[in-house]
Length: 122
Image 1 (tube, one colour):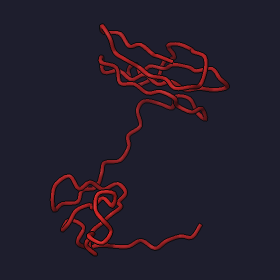
Image 2: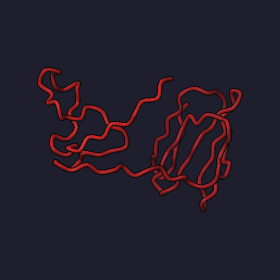
Image 3: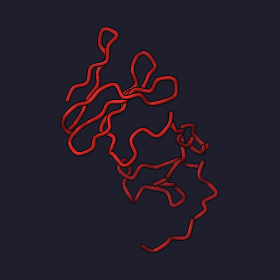
């Protein structure tokens, strides 16, 4: 893959971000920005660096894909990782991930909070 040189544009905040899907190519000003990474244009005329990522707790399940993540109403997190067709459900408790259950399959997983309980739907 060819490595590209970075380009520096000094007037990012003048027009903000112009979404190509919303404006005809012939109408986009030459100095407009149409694609950015890790920047916000929330305030008109200002460009801000988007905050980075923060790790939550320790490593949960190395090498296994995460198929579900849910923020419970009680300010706790639930994550689901799958390995060889069997899913393991973890909950973040006091900064560490604790296994709280197992399930079958590796398909879509949805969570819902109801009556102060969290329900997983496979």
